Image (cartoon, rainbow, N blue to C red; front, side):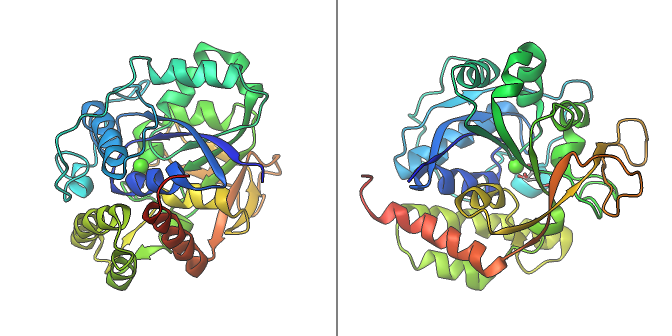
Length: 314
Ligand code: RIB
Ligand code: CA
């Protein structure tokens, strides 16, 4: 079976952490490396968090630190959701897993340049690292098989009425990525808000009884509490793993090609993904936008992914 090669660029973050768990060991995926960006927390925290997650489950994948802030605007941190460390909740052992010396942007560049164009770039945080890689070395663009991002929405935002966090945090970077000409799958709030991690889901995963499921439960205890405090939901939306799950099963999402433009000019709607759902502008589509998700199947994929940590790695 041909594995899907991917780079995961993230800002752990509780939901990013679950995306890492799902991508690190799945037999359909070949995770080449994890690149980290500032977003949910500072880069110092997010790069440590990525290493903490891998160390918890004994996965020895390389972690590369990238950009400490957006290309143009001021840094935006989501400490209200993810806490002062960015991964509040679990009690992690002292961190011994090393950070790679190479900058994330350089890792992205040479990994793509050395490839035959089969690598998917998954971003689950602000798109700064990928955007800078594209600007620094435009030759990588033709080598990107597809960009699969968690970000945006064709309805409303989650930081402002118009904008979702990952796009708002670096809208200029998102614009560079959305206009690079490569295939894009946009996994926005429209579908990620359908996968709410209710208490019964947490219990279902906890019953697996291995290190990954234990970490999942500890992460969700914090994540779901802050999401309820802020949004009033009984379960936190598990945004980021939807990107990885869509690589494991391409049938998971219902996609609709749309022309998507990032609002860089407005004040009220800065950072909005303007998705032309009805084709008013009669412009060519620029992204495959997720408009629905098989929720039950998503949780089956999460359970399957966590169960992989019950066996010794092949
Ligand atoms: O808006 C949700 C997104 O912003 C998720 O990726 C979350 O981890 C934060 O990065
Ligand atoms: Ca994220």
